Amino acid sequence: MSLKSLANFHDPSSLASRMRRRRFALFRDLAAELPFGARVLDIGGTPEFWREIDLVARGQLHVTLLNIESYTSIRADIELIQGDARDMQCFHDQAFDAVFSNSVIEHVGSFADQQRMASEVRRVAPRYFIQTPNRYFPLEPHFLIPCFQFFPRALQIRLVQRYKLGWMPRRPDYEAARREVEQVRLMSASEMRALFPDGELYREKIGGLTKSLVSFGGWRERDVDAPGSDA
Image (tube, rainbow, N blue to C red):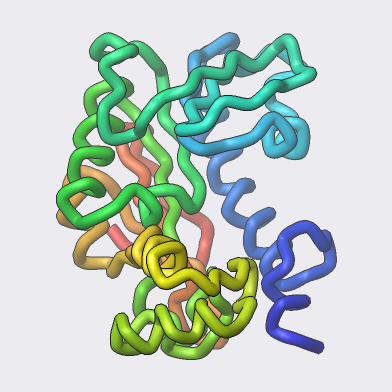
């Protein structure tokens, strides 16, 4: 089986899909404490995800999706807003009951940009659930090349110019390849703790190695029944 098959979250039988379902089960457990009709901001999400998690159709949650690019949804029960996670001044303080974000914070720019997103997340809601791939997992999850994140930048760009890697397109133009490489900045556990110091850190593991990290905070204290949880 190829690495791409294992990492294909569109395939419900893949390893990536099984890990996502486990992660979302943790969120569902946390969301059980939210009042009926609670307001949730999903940064970078899609209506399809909320159909899968099945918390909107029953009216349990009112979800707003924030994306940097606009798109059209056929779902009337989900609000779509175009905006930037680093500057969410379109929302007032504590506008939501919770913020959810899956594999977005690694795409917003530099560590300073990631700090800005984290600050905005904590400003607009008292609770959050933020997931990101672990920088120190051996397989880079976007380009699907072992240790690609540690290659010299010039080599990363050259490879993207010449090949279609993982989920990323081939970019023959140098500037386009450079932008493709630089739009991913993977994060470590210590960085996630620095950005969300009041939260807990859940580690998703494969074979003892941490594949991704989830910071969640503001929820009632509880024992998280998931291997790798780390307060």
